[in-house]
Amino acid sequence: MGNINYLFKRIKSMNFSNMVDTAKQVHQETGKNTARILFDIVYCGYKYMAGFVDYKVFKMYLLNKEQRATYITRGVNNNYVKLLNDPEAMKKVDNKLEFNKIYSEFIKRDWISLTEVSYEEFEMFFKKHKDIIVKPVDEMCGKGVAKITLKEDTDIKVVYDELIKNNQILIEECVKQNNEIAKLNPSSVNTLRVVTLKKENEVKVLFTALRIGNGKSVDNFNNGGMFTVVNEDGTITKPAISKDGTVYTEHPLTHEKIVGFKLPNFDIALDTAKKCASQIEKVRYIGFDVVITEDDALILEANPFPGHDLYQSVAHLDEDLQGLKPRFDKEIFGNKKEEVK
Image (cartoon, rainbow, N blue to C red):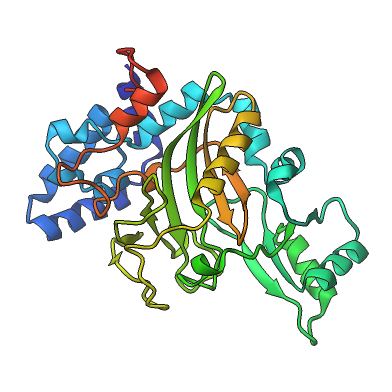
């Protein structure tokens, strides 16, 4: 019944034009009949709760039914969130201002809210830090996030008015990332995505990935960045991949090697995410964006609805093309036969 409900909800909100475009793109890649591909997309929506973006990104048209069943699709991820996270508690975690206030010990940087300070206080903050990061509190995927540098000719009042107009009300000092990680891409802070599961009094790490910018001030995968998975010891053994499917063994701008890179302070980063997760009540499944600094790590933000698009890139899977659902289900349910369907 869950699969049918999911399918009907997706049909109501679906962009059919984009779905058809997806089918055409798969046809161009594989030569398969477009109508058959469209039918298969709908079938995967019913059987595996996969959206047409899942179908394309996970290359489900190349997978057999046993492989498809191992993938954390959009619907499966939605069900993890419904099962593990309380909706009201999620709001406090998802609101960047509230999160910064409640979990300030893990933020480890100066910040202000333009809704709570005067123009004069903003001016003092800007003059103190010179470089600031501005964020809206109700956007996702790095949208509206920008870096602003104070220059001699900067009109601070004009900057302030623009921020208010654009609802970029969260102002933070720029975080200085670890020098070795900065070499990969210095234009953005390259964050470690740490997905945690809180089970009783224990916090486990389900997944880790390094997000790397590509010339922009943000590293977000959906905003021009790339990502790669990270092994349990902090080593990168797989190439990075961008949203358009381009694979990188080295960064295209800095030419720093990605494959073979070992993250400094990796254990500290994981420990920081786990400690923060342990203090959050009623939200058991969280994706943390962690910044590794020279001698420490801090939480950039927390996502109570972790994006599943990072989980199963074809560039990061083993030869059997198995997804992560069996591993996630095992951690969530233990030896029980129950699983998210």
